[in-house]
Image (cartoon, rainbow, N blue to C red; front, top):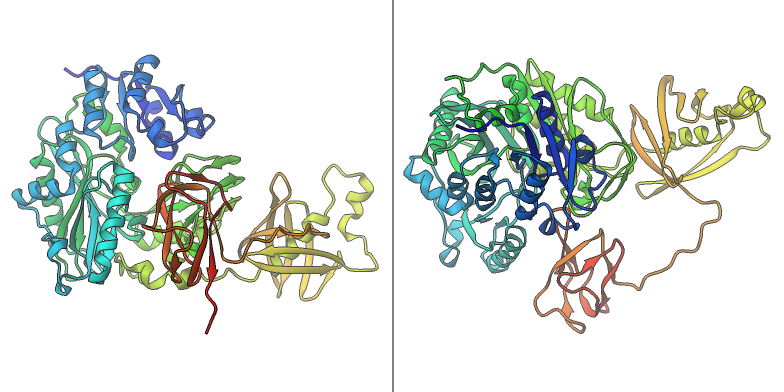
Amino acid sequence: MTPQISSLLVANRGEIAVRIFRTARDLGLATVAVHSDPDADALHVRAADAAVRLPGAAPADTYLRGDLVIKAALAAGADAVHPGYGFLSENADFARQVQDSGLTWIGPPPEAIEAMASKTRAKELMRAAGVPLLDPVDPATATPADLPLLLKAAAGGGGRGMRVVRDLDALKEALHAAAAEAASAFGDGEVFAEPYVERGRHVEVQILADAHGTVWALGTRDCSLQRRHQKVIEEAPAPGLPDTLRESLHAAAVAAARAVSYRGAGTVEFLVTADGRPYFLEMNTRLQVEHPVTEAVFGLDLVALQLRVAEGAALPLSPPQPAGHAVEARLYAEDPAQDWRPQTGVLHTLDIPGQVRVDTGFTDGDTVGIHYDPMLAKVVAHAPTRAEAVRALAHALAGARIHGLTTNRELLVGSLRHPEFGAAQLDTGFYDRHLAELIETAPDAGTAALAAALAEAAPAPDAPLAARLGGWRNVRSQPQTRRYTCAGTEYEVQYHPVDHPGVRVLSAERHLVALEVDCIRRMFHVKRNSNNTEVYVDSALGAHTLTPVPRFPDPQDRTEPGSLLAPMPGTVVRVADGLAPGSHVTAGQPLLWLEAMKMEHRILAPASGTLTALHAVTGQQVEFGALLAVVQEEPQP
């Protein structure tokens, strides 16, 4: 008989650790966190009853060290381990070691994890179970008729080690790059190829199984909106599926679970073609990032059910009936306009209003570092209909105040309000078609700059009485001038404290300015960061980050023409074969690969010419702005 759990260690970090601790507390369990050195004061550490340090910073030295995690659990008196998602969650050896240490493993049997760990082996099992599959393609014998191809890492997911190949001449390099990324991410460089389905839908089925033979298929989720093969917006149920297709997906997911004697929570993922044919992709033997949409629709706590199943409890023979629709958006610290470049720094404000669920691992003042995924929060709306849920989620995100980091918030709002999304015309090529229009420059920041200048001129609440009575209303003979930059554009604001062309000042305080613009009253929330280097202005006109321009700016250091600077702090994971000073390079040629926050970024030659300097080597840690290489452009004929 499985013993009852009294103390739970979560072998993870960030929002998923915080989310699991929330349920554990509700069930009366003691909680134990583990943390790397950069996470010493992270929210998941503060949320736990006890925390154990894993010395180091990189995941390989900390959250991926199963031996240290088990040692921490035993030292803290935990009797169960929940892996969350990512890190060690799908590591069969770790699951066995947890059980061999006398701890309860909150996950499927190690044998089931092992069976599904390799996508190639999993496909063999699914074929035997009668689950529909795409036929693999041997890259060595691929022909133009096989294109386009999708290269995938056999041992992992999350978009790592994946490449779309549309030209046979590019296949060799793509295989090399995919294998290198897979080896770096998963310790296994095996890559396989299969047909790439244009405009396919990514649809998955949440399953939950107990040790008594019951397997639930908890509806479908659509996860088609993706960037770099990583999900951005997910919803349940998947809209627009015929009942026969939905039932066949449920049946295939249950068959997949029974084929490996599954137990606990898991997800079976499918690719659905434009003409409605489903194909098995993979099975994730863990809790999914997007599990909250299923929880909302079915009124369940999947973490609580995971814990009860691990204790040996039997599920009811049938799950509850679903109700309504739920949509989740992943809020990332990244810049979609700069090739989804991850952002690091201090998150000064994270405030998302509305009747939405927010799962996050951050609070105001926390730092987003370079070592981990840049997801700030998952925001989930649930409503009786899809249209209502989408509208509520878009409204909450549009009204959010997020200060200190560039995020994908505007992209999420634009995606949710896009006509194709509203009509449930979903497929994995959504951002290929619409990214350019979704990352258009934000509305003019001139009015926001005026609000920032008025707030700056407003007297502080603790100012002398005379200043507070007169304040910004004192009329000066000359207009006041402030300059700000926003998204690369400089704005100069000349204003009298009362009179502004086309704008009527209704009130101005340090953090709130009311303006009447074109006869419409607008409220502008204004906040400066702690060192006064940025001003954040939020209103119904949009969110703007303004940088005050010094009155007497310091001269800027100039870099040598053709210098390639690190766009973010990270690790050099690869240098192009044969690249050395003196090499001839062509414009757009990949020279270096940087990895930061679980994403890989290419550093391209800015022009055709000669590489005159190379300062980067594989394995090197570089800071933002570090000089990586110099390309001397060849003279134009």
